[in-house]
Length: 358
Figure 1 (cartoon, helix red, strand yellow):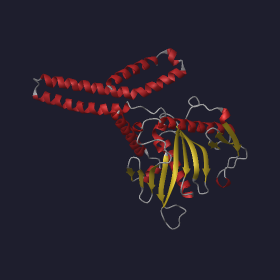
Figure 2 (cartoon, helix red, strand yellow):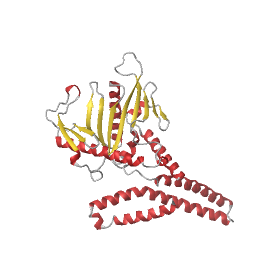
Figure 3 (cartoon, helix red, strand yellow):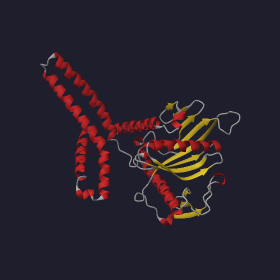
Figure 4 (tube, helix red, strand yellow):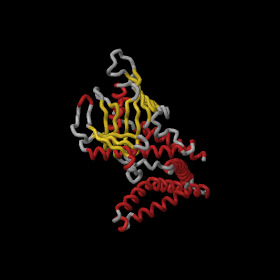
């Protein structure tokens, strides 16, 4: 591992030198790619240098103690330094193992989130809106931009389904574990007898695929236009600006009616289609990976029940990692870092365990 880190540090310095080269600076694409690589390598190299300094201090303390002849007070001081740096080396070594884990190439990408009401009718649609609000508030807290692409609203203000983009650095790395079935247990607003109902909502998080990463043959597309409409006749658009695109080989259908411009709706719909097909391609590739190498947390099974939101008890439970929290209202207001951090940590632990078995 440490030989690899030395080579990484050497490469990091080489990239840093290239970034000062006028020829590189004048080449926007090359400069952008090198800056991205430099930024990615920086935390690894900084941690390695911290480790190397602690290891050197530990070795020097050992040499002094092994040589003997130290005065009592000085010996105690050196011994304390040895213990401190020994602990530091162990901690930094574990942190470096995590930093050296293979990274998901999609982690820095923007995401497209799709939320659909499942079992539970109107109550599921209302909770779909609650989840949309939760992710929107979370995105806002991170300084990310949220934009609705397509929405099918209900009379009571819920969403039968909603698709929206979240643009921001590292959006996919933070939200990729949200795909799956979210279950809610509460007394619905429409319920008069006060009985607790259970409803479900499905969430899908797709990394945004660039056109250069996944190209679509125009001959494979059927593009239809229609008039956009809202719940109860609201937001009726008198022109046919809404777009429906069908990818004929796979049968995947996407719609976009949020913009008044047909061109903008088509552009957004193509982004979603490209991301859906890209995700399917990635899923097929991941299925080929040996079972022991797969993350135990998972990032894409939409049929898996991943989380329960229990309103009577104010409880949120993530079933994949056995995490239970008791500040549900706070979570639904977008404060979900505690959940996401726990999922990221569990994913790292699973990868480290799989690496150790190899």
